[in-house]
Image 1 (spheres, rainbow, N blue to C red):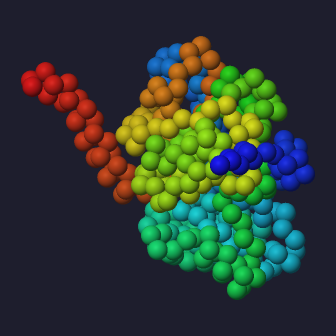
Image 2 (cartoon, helix red, strand yellow):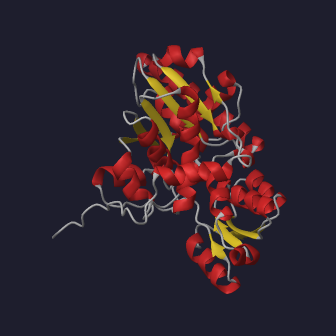
Image 3 (tube, rainbow, N blue to C red):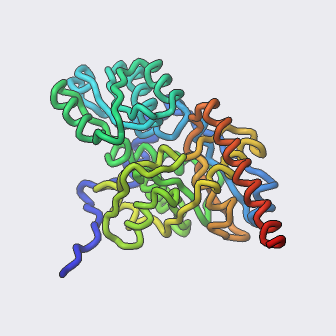
Length: 348
């Protein structure tokens, strides 16, 4: 039995740093140049100099606006008139809807019925038609493709598209231009659009920077794909990081990640919660669970790089505050159990 070789980058169709630079020009004046925050507490805790790129302050509340606007801005006039369709659990949905509103392009979004209500509401408020589906019984890609065919719409996927990847890479371009070369860059990973775009930009601007992708343990398809060098999948993973519930890497993102990314790691659900609320409490910013993935790897010691300059992308801040209360209670319950465990062992 033979094993298929790992995918390689096709120089004719893949994404390059020149594409990231072109995306940055399109985004100028349309996307926010998001702030970079530092924390003495984090630096002391990690023994490193850490720079948080705060994409939770991006338009529509996440990095996704970068890729969405870059993709929609390059459509033909006919495609713009007809409209676009996308499938997303939330942040890509909002980003496409807002970019469509700015560019006067009709948008239709296929969203799971259990997507956070704050993301559904924001998507509608930006003017999109929202079509809900049951993620347990319906494959979102197939539904979106069918609607696109029936209505003659252009399908804009959430991560596996050259224009999307190039747009997402502008976040790292901004980060490195703002703070200088990095030794390490930690980036969350769902379908790999942000990770692959970030790795392309880091490779061009800081060639010695090692890019580390971070996933939830419960949705570790990209990590398994990275180490096996064969595409792995996961079906509806049960993780609070809803932006990482993607089934697999894509035909563009997988080879780019194999080529440019140095390592992949995973973090537990508890680690995600602890890190999210740590960022809320110490940096005074609202970050959603997926947005805290990269930070969790550093704050929880999954990766440890003392005396290094480390960039961390906080990818988004779209969280339902009603749900946040439930998550806080869950985090406190887990903390109590962890604190009581040593005492229980002592008494046993």
